[in-house]
Length: 497
Image (cartoon, rainbow, N blue to C red):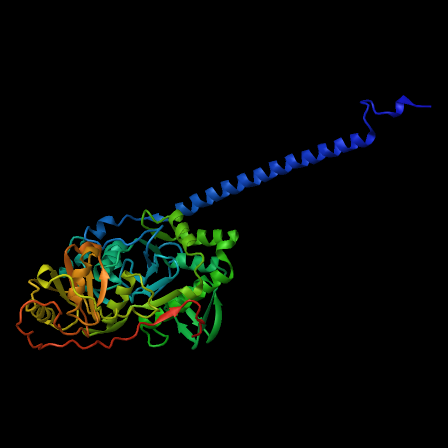
C-alpha cells in the first residue's frame, strides 16, 4: 500500500533536497570567501597606502635649485630612461637622535660629507657603478658656494668642506663643474639612519685581516669575519686612524667591501621579495634621509624596479684616482686618470670593459674640401702650445676656419666630435690625425671639434689638401701619460679580498 506521507511535502525526492541543501551551503561558503578575500585585499591596499605615506613623510626634502645655478651640464637621462646619476652623501653631523657621542669634539662645527658616492645607473639598466670621492680631495670649488661664480674663478678647497659651506647643493655644483656630469638627484643620510638600516637588514658581515681598536670610531674588533649590527657597523666604516695607513683611501676600501656585503645580503635574503623585511628596511632608511623634492619613495621604487634584475656581478665600486697634493701631504688631488673615469661616466661606458679602439683607417675618397670646414682644436694633452701647433698644420692645408682652446684636465689620444650632418667633413679632419676616435655630438652645428690628449699624433697631410706649402716642422710632441689603471671592485667579490 502506497503511503503518501512518505513523500516530501514539495513532491521532490529526499536526495534532491539533500543536493539542494549542499549547494546552498557551498554558495554560502563562496560568498564568505569572496567577502573575506575582499576584506583582506582592502586591508592590504590601505596598509600599503599608509606605509607609502608614512615612508614618504619620513623623508626631509631640500630644494637646491638655487645652489646649482643655470650653467649646468646637459641631462642625459632620468628616472624612467637614459643613464641616471644620483649623489649619495653620508653626513657626519653629531646632533640629533642616533648621532651623538661620536668623535672627541675637536671637529669643526656643522656637517661635513664623511662619505661621497656618485651612483651611476646605465641607460640599459644592466650595470651600476658607484664612484667613491675621497673626502680629502683638493678640488676647485665655487667661492662661498656662489652658484653664479664662473668655473675659471673657483678656488681649490677640501672636498668635504663643500657640504659644511653650502650643503648638498654646493657638493652637486662642485661635482658637476669639475666633471661635466649632470647629477639627477641626491640623498643624504646621517649616522643614525645608517645604523637603523644595518639593523633592519639583520646585520652585515665584514672581514678584517687585522684587529681594530679605534676609540674615535668606538670600535674594537678581532681579526676575521664578523656580523656587525648598526652601532658596530658604523664604527667599522668610520674607522681610520688606527687601521692600515690611517688614510681616507684605506677607509674607502673598507666601505666598498662593506657595500659589497650589503648587496650580497640583500640578494641572498630576497629583500625586494619579502614584504616584512622590505617594509622594515624602508622605514629605517627613510627616517634619517634628506633628498631633493623629486626623489621621494615613488621615484626610489621606480629606480629599484628598473634594476631589480641586476646581479651582484654587474654592480661595481671604484675610487676616483688621486695623487699627493703638493701643498699638503695629508691631502690628495685628482690624478689625470680621473678624467678617463669621468669621461666613461659621461659616455655611459662600463669602466670594467676595454675602452673602444679607434676605427680602422677610412680608405674612401674624401668628399669635403678643407676650406669648407670649421674646426676647433682643444688642447687636453698637458703640453702647452700643442693646439696652436696643430692649427698651423691644418691652416697650411687649406683649413681656413680654425680656432684653438684649452680643455679641462688631461685625456688620452685624439677625439673628433661632429654633428651627424658633418660626418663627411669630420672624415676630412680625421685624415689629419691618424688613429683618431670619431663620435657624434648633436650640439656642435657646423663645427668639427678635435680634442688632443696625451699621446696625440702630430698633424699629417690629408689627401685632398689645398696648396703646396710644406707642413711646419713640429717642435712639440705629446707622449702618452702612464696613468694608474682604474681598479673596479665587483659587488660579487669576496669581502675578505
